[in-house]
Amino acid sequence: EEDPAAALEKEFAAWQSQVGVDKASIDASLNPVERYALSFKEDIEPFYSMWYLSEQQRIQETESAQEEWDIAEIEAGKAVEESNAIENGDLLATMPEPEELLRQRHLYFREKSRLRANKKKRRLTGENWIVETDGKSKLPFWYNCDTGE
Image (cartoon, rainbow, N blue to C red; front, side, top):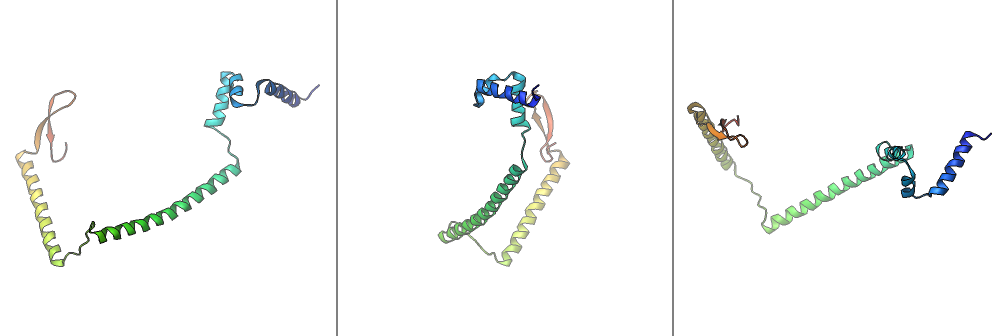
């Protein structure tokens, strides 16, 4: 009696010599269940050896080190572009006087309080509610333009 493993190996060798070794002919000779199992093992749940995983990790570390180098190079390029823009007059850099900063701060707070007072006035008078029309149903509804409700 033959060993079952040897018999299986002999059967596989006979099948391989009949079908051939290229992937297309192997796929064509498989039934649908075997084809699904093969695609499952190749695409969905492939086997990765420890060597392959360690090699992928090494490649990823090499690429990340390269990216860090590229970032420094980009920053240097930006600094050169900025200095060229300042020299050509395309970019203006100013140092405001402290007196102007106080004036700007005053203008900012005045405008902010004016906007807050207008919002409060609209809320008290009901002017913040407007009638809008729904795009789908074409029915009117009340919309608060300050809160978005």
